[in-house]
View 1 (cartoon, rainbow over the protein chains, first blue to last red):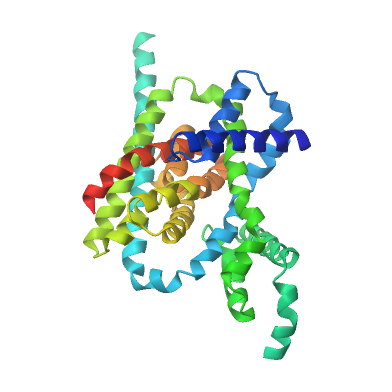
View 2 (view 1 turned 90 degrees about the vertical axis):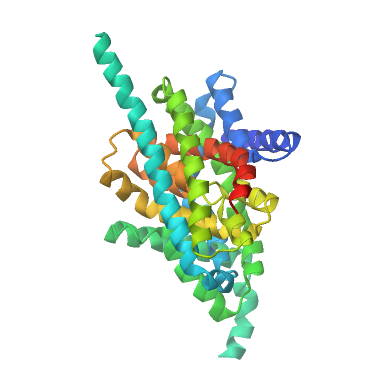
Length: 120
Length: 236
């Protein structure tokens, strides 16, 4: 528990430092994720040491969004003035993004499966 | 009634009460979601529907609420870092998919940014609104800095990220079923690319592989979007 939390905060901190170094356009948490992954992959950190903490906090991620979500109340007026445009744009674009990403990835996988069949 | 509220407000404005309120409301949300299985009744939405009116009625301002619950907001960072472990667990499934994953997320990022900006433009949104909308699919800390870069409002960008996350989490699984996606990697990748950590929370429900890939997608999408946003400015 303590060891796992320490490792996660340690890599978060390293990520934040690295983020500052490159001008901040990739957030520290994302860089921390990559660093933690690499440390596990190259066996610098034992997987058992972070397993419990990592599993429990990633399983319940949505609860960490509550403070930001409640923040919508502050922008209620600003948002409600252009509500229809905002919602249509977000909804349409989100669906398009989901479809694009899923289709591109699935087609890659199908093509590779077909190539395998041909070879065999 | 007002006297009563004035008397108890100091107790309601404390860290311990507001944190308990958030966790209690979210827990209630989980119970409702598990009992009804209605996709719209996401615990996050239930919690918001309970907490926002509560704050309005008790006249506790958002700043006070945010200050006292900031530990939860802070946890967004470590939870993204922890996805590194989930990814490591699933690494076997990613091997051989690196090129397709990068291509898929890059295409998704282009489509996502261009479509949200263009739809908003057609519907009469101004530059400030478009700049705040453009980074909607990435995780909050990235979205805020990107919106700032291009003349958007950070707080609005954060709000749009949440709306996009809730919406994608809701309809994502339905859309994926509709278009007949079978690949677990494709499903996870789509959820994380379109709806960041909230999409990932839903992808986690689909399975560990979907969740891990979705977590990976948050990172890649964040990086791709950061690189693409400067070009998106030409669309405004």
